[in-house]
Length: 327
Image 1 (cartoon, one colour):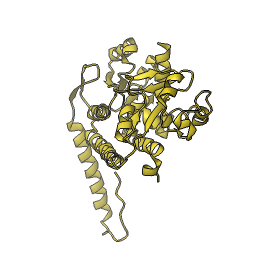
Image 2 (image 1 turned 45 degrees about the vertical axis):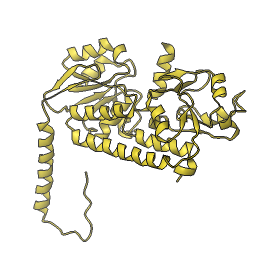
Image 3 (image 1 turned 90 degrees about the vertical axis):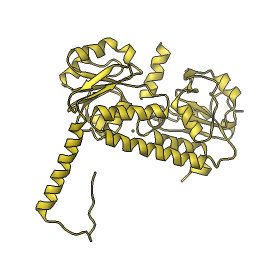
Image 4 (image 1 turned 90 degrees about the horizontal axis):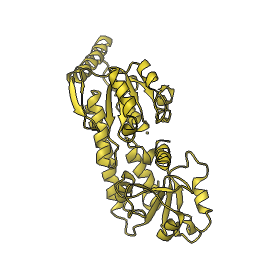
């Protein structure tokens, strides 16, 4: 259990109009009326979405009578989704691990894995965005929130890109921002499609080992994880594809797998992550080490199941195939 907690911790630790000079000028009153009409139309669209009934990751039927005005997020990926949906003003509380966007760091903190129930209640939210990865360990706390009259929505613990898209759509539907959610998902899919197309031209597929926590407690994503799917998207082979889910792996096993490239994802929290892998005892004959093909990719881009995940795929592609995806 302690190892699982460590892994979860590491994974936790991503409409304006510009008028041209030649545009025809409108009278001030007309511009103001247009602006107000647009706001009214957007408001009507949001309001018409309610009441709304949806099922969350626990298969609980949740009904929201009105658009939430105050939202608390219990995990960084939910926070990133909410901000991407334009809900920065509605968000009143976030977890201690939230670092993106910068505005999130200025919100009230409600704790980490063990969130502060009293603090959340004091913020008087209409909606709490919980998460499937921790919901079963927080049953009592979540029930206390429900008992206080707060709507709790448990977002799924996404293990595939389709499930990430579902998470974004779910939060969008619950917050009256469905149209924006659709736009975000479409943008992600378009980016992934473009990367796949470019990757399809790669002739020599590389084997990649991804390290999400350092020695001596090395963890790696096996199959049935979105990081495994990322490697498939960029036409690379996952060295840990024989494993299922997020697994601990010993150093000898990694050496035997002899990957062409090693990717670390914790350099944001651990200084010189890639350099430390290059200097490990007994790893000198690993192809990735011999050829110095060890790189760090920002953890938040490749481990947080949110809107920036497509950007993470691109960064991963640049690290593994710089000759194809390099700037």
